[in-house]
Image (cartoon, rainbow, N blue to C red; front, side):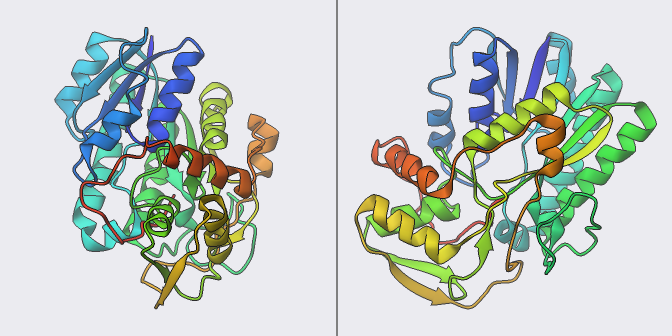
Length: 330
């Protein structure tokens, strides 16, 4: 039986697919190659996966019920890991309807697939953005999350509630994983660390919203993937887990680390804070540590070094349309 990974050609998805294949799992990656960024980026993500035993790529949309049914008919599925989304706070402010259609309707289609086909395990990629603006830190999973700051955050909260409903009604094991500012090799071109690196490298101004003191819980991709695999294998019932580094870093400190790794000085242009921004994200990972054995091992300085090594190696390629819009990260 196979594991269906939606968004399997993306940043997190391609890393997860590779890890699962290394573990001897059979994986179907579903991705629609949305033109949100250059298709070639995702094709590079998959370059080391295509042709590997146990791997199949399906191009299509998670909202396509007939396609989902055909996938499950062709290959019995043991689990769904749902990473696909219309991602980013900024993008959701620009097109909230599309964000809701993909993130809510698409998630519902996948939950219906699980119900109809008797798939007993479902892992949903949620986001730290569901917490909104908070003064009490770190963030704990049992705290109420009824004040989302963006349409994107609201759709992720809705996804968690849909997951609870399907667990309660149909007994499907549901793990909702709240990702905290994931970064690392293959990061999308418009996400902050990738964008900052490219602009500093090219000697261009780096737009920073606010004075650079916003704090984020940056989490390296390898640590996130370890958490996803642990949730897939160990989580039962309905559970919500924070997957973060449980250590916050100011944006201006991240810029210093990138500058140091590149050996180039950042030219910063401070801009007003934008709608949807929050002052801090900070994960309590006590539950994930206790129940999943989750234990992040990559500090931000080493993670930035690894990212810059990948960037300098040319694997990042060139974005089709260089963007200076910073996407709020999961």
